[in-house]
Amino acid sequence: MRIMDGLYYYPETGFTSNSYIIDNEVRILVDPGHQEHIKDLIELLSEDGFTLRDVDLIIVTHAHVDHCGSVRVLQNELNVRVAMHEAEREYLVDQARYFHRLLGEELWMFTVNQWFKGERDECVSNSNLLILHTPGHTPGSISIYSPDKGYLISGDLIFQGGVGRTDLGGSGELLKKSIELVSKLDIDMLLPGHGPIVVGKNEVKRNFNFVKGFMDSVL
Ligand SMILES: [Zn+2]
Image (cartoon, rainbow, N blue to C red):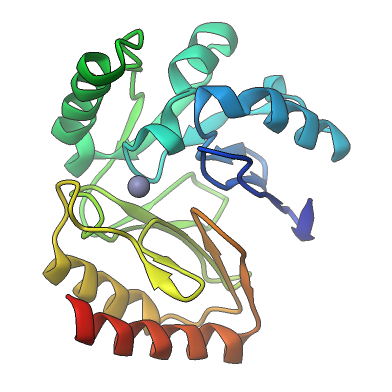
């Protein structure tokens, strides 16, 4: 569903994540989700006139199976490029091995063609997107910020009324720092990895304040 010019939101269906399309010169799919979600995603995309073949780049916010379990299949079928943060490199391998052992699933390791580096990385030239390293939920979690359009895709860093869990290789301390960092940005729309989006500068601010209070009591 189109939520602003060049930006589309596809809510999670079951055990998967929200997905987003950033429709610039390079068409980016953020977090394609779990493999079982792909059929639903294809249907939702088609309502906006997209197919998966239109995607030039997949950005994975972090290496959890509900966000990137489908990437391997998509990469095999579409030969699409994949990008994530270099601080997630080892964690990605650990997660792939873990799910292989736990579920006996086919190893869902995929190839990363572009590793974002440092605290801040310009994503794709001309798109004016910033990739922010926002660890805490996982070591290499990222948020995608558009200063021009005022949106932040936050992965599992922060949700409406909550924060990402830190007990899967994350860190409460880093999560707090990352939330502090992004709360200083000028954001009109917060687009999390799960649950509803938060619309409006005041609502986004209120959500940050609520979450910060909540974090102080539990982390
Ligand atoms: Zn996660």
